[in-house]
Image (cartoon, rainbow, N blue to C red; front, side, top):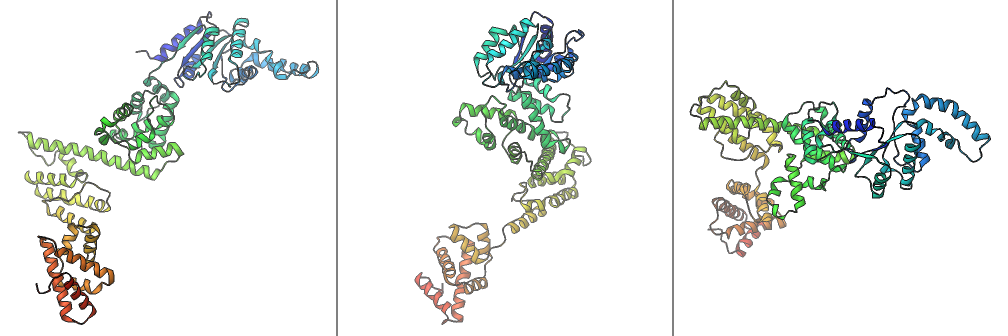
Length: 553
């Protein structure tokens, strides 16, 4: 299928070949590729007629007057290579300088040089870009007059490159059409076509995904697409080939955030919206969301963005500051690669168990490629899943290999779990003793045993208790209570005693509490009996009496 650029180029060549069209407009949205189309067309134009100079392309962006427009035209690169121009500047230019200095008062050299412009533009094609971006004080009527004068009097032909979405003054558009333009060619490429122009001949590993993302977002601005590709290159080109999972995690969000940052979308979606987006949460609040937000959610879903994470923060920082946090990006890419490997091994894992559960002809082969892959990468499974795999291996006649799976898993994951960097281990009734032992080690390291004083302080502070407090109370002894009571002073002692008496008032206390309370009373009785006249004994006696609790019970 012929694309928009090819059709537009063929049409433009046809129009330029028909000399009855003196002024042709090539219009389209900003960044749609009008200048690119002209450059491609220029190389295909028939320039065998030596009597006609080469086409002249120039921009009048910011031009303030008709003289500035003409001087820009004279200064363009095409004329610098033109023999007629060199002859004029070399001979006529020197002559005009002399005339200006000796005979013509009040006339500048620039104005005299411009007198030769009609001869230079005779029978030429002049391509004018950025008319809509002229200086606000430059009257469009002056430009119209220039075009009309040269097209009528000097056989100059004009190609006007017009950004249709940037003509703020509608009168400019109307006047151009009514007074000078003979025919207009409208360039309307789609996103895929503009992407191909922006990417050129580059073979990018993320090219197909970037092209798809550009299409989803409806971007038809070549400049914006080139910026997207540049951002992708800066961020991920150093990592070489990346697999599909990693690219899916990167390309869509990079494309979207870059397009938002450079105002390349028709949608009003914001960077802040992307930052807080979570597809799971949004799915449960669709009724409370505006139609615009629902449209934004659809865009994010199509781009395979489920939620923003550290990668999106890195992209946003780069777009706003130009700085890449490379160490943080390295870690994100490492995590994405691991997630990709984990996803792949889980597919293998599910396939094995599906076959084991439902295939009447299932035969377990310890040396099969799929099983070998599972054995090699079992450390990527969760503790629960590797435990299930261990059972399957054992049931299929490979108990030693089952044990090796568990020991290998522990070797690879214990340090990661201990550091808190892994979410693939949770406390559960592990059937394999090595996993149960690991669970105990992790729990002990994360939640070291509480002292009695710490346990009661936590009970008082939290107005409740948990496993750590229960363990501490169940392991308490009379001696440990004595040591705590003898070591506390002032408010700390008062609070400790008060909390124990509070527990004494609990109806139907647990076994742990009954064990601890018995030790509490025994310890207090031992302290009082050993030295009844001490200050500590007097404090304990007074406290028991005030709570109507006897030590003999």
